[in-house]
Length: 303
View 1 (cartoon, rainbow, N blue to C red):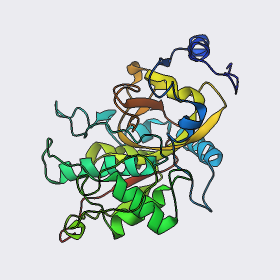
View 2: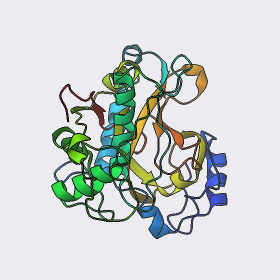
View 3: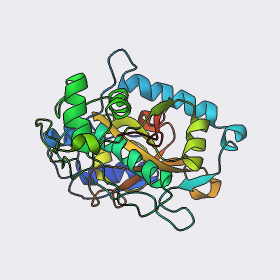
View 4: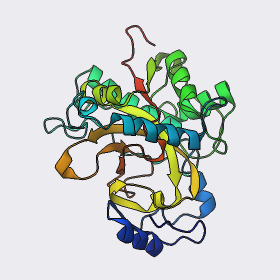
């Protein structure tokens, strides 16, 4: 497969190589694609926790795992197609947000999952729930792991904080992009919600969790051409790595006559990027299914 060059990549180059190698997805102009190379780095923010597999190792392990899962038995473990944006005509997903130029994606991907879990816990598809990414990142990442907009964070950190300290609502600590002090509202202790979680490494279990319980949070490698994603099932067409990134996985599709099997994800780059803020990515691509994190409902008595 031909690949894009590692430097001076333009939208027309991306579109050309996609056409030459098979149109799994379409590239197009958008506000994120037009950012400078330096600004694009801050649109990620996931970094593997020290002592865990690197981004490259995560990709290698994900590809091997996906190859093993391409069996009828693995697919039969879950329904062939599921999407929390349309469950019997109801959309359980909260609105698309924008992390801005700050490597806070781990907070956004984690919160996106927690918000849906809360709606499902209360069986209210339209429940007004909006948790504070600022609390999770500017309080949690800094206090717990000394992480910032520049050096990003890992999923183990966000889920540890979410379970131990909890998170307040957006109104208690509104998010703005850029490192800042933890500045919770006066009654923050009464507004915290705690969420236990667990890590899932088996693809069959990932699908089963999504189709029966709720979305999952994951991380993957962002290649340069991903910023131009418009629609379709994404497969990287370049070797140029920009950053690691975290998103919420809201569905998947295994159906044979639909195209390439894929995960369906909610991004945090605003509604003008991708498919109104969402994207599809092929199984095993970019380390997307190396591991995923499940968030459980806030326990009774949680402050």
